[in-house]
Length: 398
Figure (tube, rainbow, N blue to C red):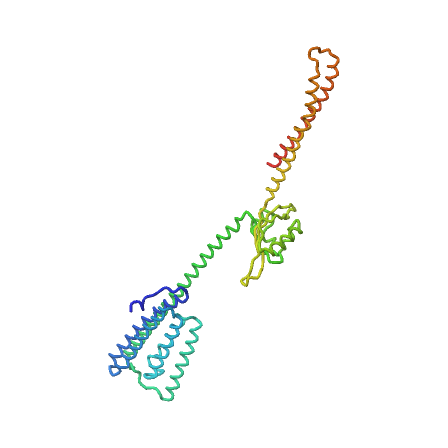
């Protein structure tokens, strides 16, 4: 029996909420009605069988509903429980007091319970059912089909007891309703707070992008672009929203081939493309993109990132130029320098060191001078090439 009244967690949050409040309603209502029946036995012992029968029905039905709730049949149990109370109240009113009796006053509480444990739409359904059920009692009363006397009696004390019971029952149901409202508000506030935190987190991440993130539709119209576009191309994001990306490609034919590859493969990675900045400068970039799809799997746009490789390309070009100059220096050293050096060495071998006044020496000296000048000129070429490399390095540093 203890397992019937225990509360198991239901995976569906909405059903778990309804099960929670049904259990909070079924047990107290069963206790309240049982108390009223005991009062009825004390006040009118001649109706003891009636009161005992009602108590037995309620005390049997309530654990049954709790059992089905525990088995997961929450929504069905809620409908059956409310219908059970409508039938029981109308049946008791029919056999004692009718539309003027005490029992019919429970109908508004059943309607209130329906809104709490089923939903705000269903409260209207049970409201209409309760109204029509009361109308049946009205018609029956006019046609004198109902007992004249209320089963519990009409003394002031009985009215006070019944009214007090109903008041506290309504207070309890109202407390549950307010608790549900406060819980919903707290959950909503918590969800809003977490969503705000999440949005702030992603906003900071989005704004801290070094690369440029973008989204376009299938026609190329820009939908979203990260703030990093300002540092990369000089544009404010709002300047680009709604414009077509084709306005910013430096080589449209390569853009067309990129789009063709993207639509065939669904994605591209590190695709080199030149873009135009706001000041007209060319930005060397690599683009990684993929096609976005809607819930039905149909393509509805493109998103990706743009990585600026302008500095890298500039460094590569600089390195390439430096290598070309170094190659020229190496060529000069390995080929051009060797000729005047060979001439100098050859002429030196012809010099008559023993006879300085030898006429051959006078013929060799002018030729040595020519070869030396050639060597000096080659050395100047090497120095010039070296200065070019130094200037390139100096300009690159600035």
